[in-house]
Length: 301
Length: 315
Ligand SMILES: Cc1ncc(C[n+]2csc(CCOP(=O)(O)OP(=O)(O)O)c2C)c(N)n1
Ligand SMILES: [Mg+2]
Image (cartoon, rainbow over all chains, first blue to last red; front, side, top):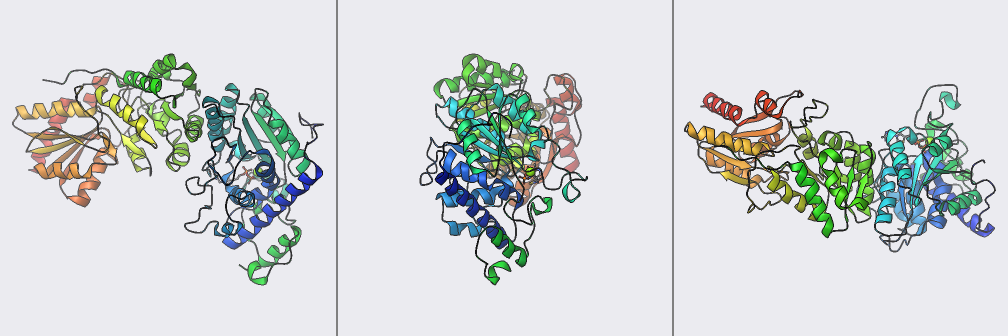
């Protein structure tokens, strides 16, 4: 990894790293189980983001799950709102609501809507789903924290495809202008989007066309850029610790990830962005994620 | 006899929100690089720390407003109606209307008076769009007196609001004793022959049209509807009952705006013969204000002519 994070070692000990790796594994298990149960929802994006979500909710963010409206909490905006199930899993594991509730995902009247709805679920800091917007809202939160004298940080997670939205760069420009060093944007750089361009990449598709020079673009907009392997927990904790100390600029963490990470047959395939899981695939996924073989009725939803 | 001129609503905007912010530290203003036009500059002078210049980036501006609102701040938006409503429409929908966040969308340059800019700046369908959006209230004040009160009300109201303001000086309808009530229509003139329902800066011209009609023996009942959503259904039904004949008049497309709202309401509650005076299904050219009012049939004289024609046709 190049960038400012090179050479930074985490202050977290090996036990902490192992604990968070287990959290990330359990997020992935929930993602696959719940999406299979609901017969709908996204897989590739939440799986690529799982390690980052674990590190945010169990290490970097100052939150009180038992008091979700605590005014001095750090905020999180999932700008790539289609990865909602990953966020819900992290929140359930962190204690915001019972893990069993995850199975209501996408059901009518559920608090766990297909895309995050802050009016239904306490602890969600913004509603998202239309790509490109979350970063603006997070910028408003960071600016509002400053104006109201709250020492809070605003974290926002974007997809690399999402960075094709012009609004992302409007926000990037304005956040740098306001020197919002309490704003941390994490870009889940998994090199795939929903469909993308036809070409000679994997499965005949090209990676998102903004990336390639993602780091350079954020730097050019006046951001501090930290690059990290988004599946190396110790390294993730390192950059998030570093990002916590502002230097007058907003911070972009560019996390190198694999879409579908953790499930062998999903990794790196655009078509697992969202797709129904077959029973034998479900069993394989559970095995890949270190879970016991599922009961036939759970696999064959 | 015509109603006198009042002050430009845009000045009222800058002054009133600045005054409100003096008493309420939660109030901030976000500008899309047009504060020198919307008179957001008055706020900037009074409260430079709370004047948040967002540059020419309206989508981001509305999103930032949502984030600020989650932190307990009360953002007022300074831009033109066209750039406040349609450019960032999805941001308004997802981040403001669907969340119910406390953002005040208060653009200037509603209707025809945009300083001779032409159709890119003259938006004819903002009321139709915002009124159709679940979770959004839509208010269109008649004059400077009412605009000041609507802005004060908006600051106190919890939740998203859309308030459309006018750039230039328009006629004054109300005196200082007037009290705006959210969700209430106001009877301006009692009459027996036809009910004219009007909104925004058109209402004073509609009142003048009623006086012209009176000189010809047509006694019009005039109702002003500042709050287009939620609509004052009881008042609309009562006003229709009063004459049995309704004509809406608005400086806006006749599709889906006040005319649409009144037609929907009467269709359901009190089927009544109704006509809609307003902009037809077209875009608007640039030109001096009075010329535009005449060309598009919204001057007092043109409205009274049209009302007379419509009444004759349906007699
Ligand atoms: C404004 C908008 N356009 C299109 C979509 C549909 N959509 C949902 S996810 C997605 C691809 C996102 O790709 P990326 O940002 O790279 O996310 P990830 O790879 O992490 O899933 C698209 C096009 C949307 N949700 N919002
Ligand atoms: Mg991607």
